[in-house]
Image 1 (cartoon, rainbow, N blue to C red):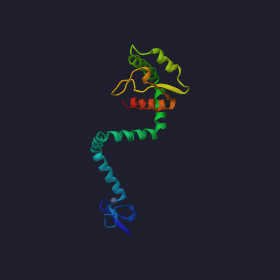
Image 2: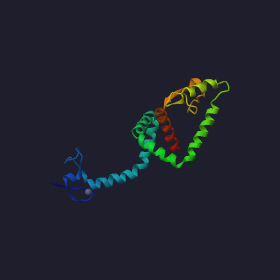
Image 3: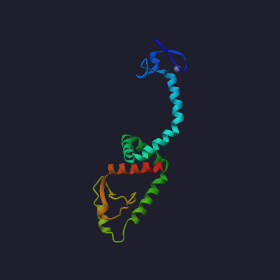
Image 4: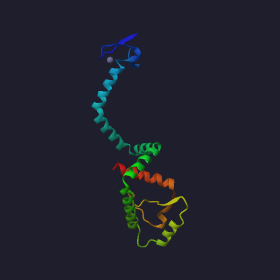
Length: 174
Ligand SMILES: [Zn+2]
């Protein structure tokens, strides 16, 4: 059994048409090849509009979108890490820049009255395989943490790596 495609007028076997249960034969009027061409040009035509719509949606569903991004990141973590490593290898100047920036940030976040001996002790007593991290980030989006004992905590290297890779991914995007 064959059917004529209304676009190319060729008689084709029924399995050359995509399924559409609302149609008479349960298949589309266009053959698969024509359907593809049509949807491709539609796709091109509507690309801009869809992009705009998606942006609107993203802004309206910020939290959900962020959640999707996070999930995507964790699923593709190894790929991200590989890319970051590659990128760092090609930009050795970035590491020294990041180190200087970090030092300046810490200096800025260190109040005159801070108990520097206590801070030193926290660093000295750091458990093996852990790093010192700021609970409230020194360069938070809304708040800026201080370099003081009660804002310091220990993180495993793995936890810290997840954190810094996220930062790196973010830096690579801007
Ligand atoms: Zn056709």
